[in-house]
Amino acid sequence: MINSLEAKLPELGKHARVMALLTYLMGTQVWMLEASKVVIDAVYERIEAYKEIQPSHWIHLQSLEEIEYDRPPLWGVPFSVKDSIDAAGVPTTVGCPAIAFVPSSSAPVFQKCIDNGAIFIGKVNMEQLATGMTGCRSSYGTLNSTFNPEYIVGGSSSGSAMSASQGLVSLSLGSDTAGSIRIPALFNGIVGFKPTKGTDSVRGVYPACSHHDCFSVPPASALSDCSAIYQQMFSQAAEAYYSALHYGSFVLERLTILPDGWFERNNQLLHPITRQVLEAALARETTAADLFRDLHKQTIVMVVPTAPFHSAIQEVELEPFATNVKLGSFRHFANAPDLVALAMPCGTYQNVAKKRQRLPFGITILAECGLDRELISLGKHLQEYLCELVGCDFG
Image (cartoon, rainbow, N blue to C red; front, side, top):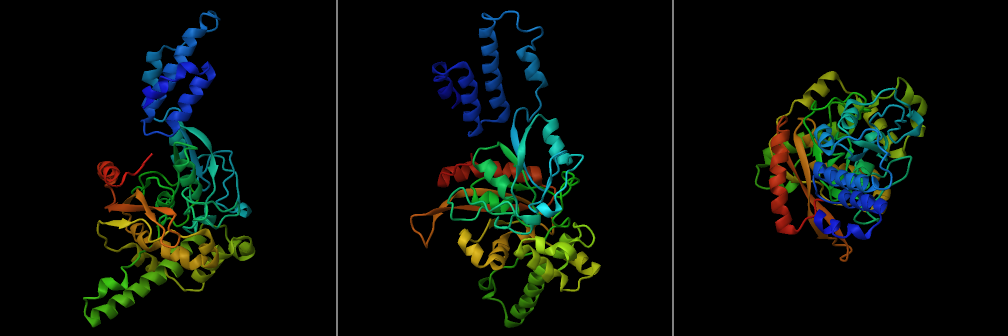
């Protein structure tokens, strides 16, 4: 693929040649190290040619071999970060200007990228306080899906998914409390990964809910063959899970990230839906025992759809809370037991309401915590199969 471009490069000016390589490589599946090598080779060819014009330009010039040896793994890779991740000297707003602050140090996960040679481009939009999965609650405006401007981008790592899917950057750092990486990854046709909690330090990352969120339940049809008694037992459990998810201890934990008394004094500064979610949680009495029980549930490994549907922005505006709840049907339960999750695009499907429109579809593979490497390896093999099956572009 690179060779086809290199054949055309002599037609370009020297400056244009390097820029053409950079632009081309940003949108391909070429490994970053290979991409860097092509760019550096082009730079050194240009240097050699310039020696004929200005032979005394360089006092010391690193040899190509030295640069190859010293190059860090993310050398020259442009990246963006969700605006809940601290970068020293850059404001962190969490999508809410009223609580913005300027950190004096960077989050370790951000600093790792810098130390490994990545280039920080900027911070991107996100759902306010990371409280939703639609991408429609931010003081900085609403983004839309890269597939269709009428449809939601997903959240809460909205800008992260968009900047990566559009090739504005090569990668983006987000956070996933209850699907906040996986949902926007699906709606923008890219891969999203939720690692085992603790794989990287969360210091310097404004927390949404440090213990992660709760569970979803199967649809009623899954109980059709069960006895009436068991159906009643399961319905009671389902109601308890639903209540814990939207009104219980995990939602209350989000309030602990705010300064003491801030919510009572400044709740009118929040997005109306964000305020409604937090007020509903405050209305329910919750104990430390509730939180402990919510955290210790048994889980299984499975493959699920990443989301049950893809809403239009207008639909979210009409029913913001209900839409957000339904979007989490296949997402919330993965975080409480700390399952590893890999969201992968699987092509598109035809929108029933508007037959000319095609929307992205994807699956999420879930594994036990600690199996990050194994899950990524499985994802690579599955990716090849899916590409052959449905012609996916995992760019």
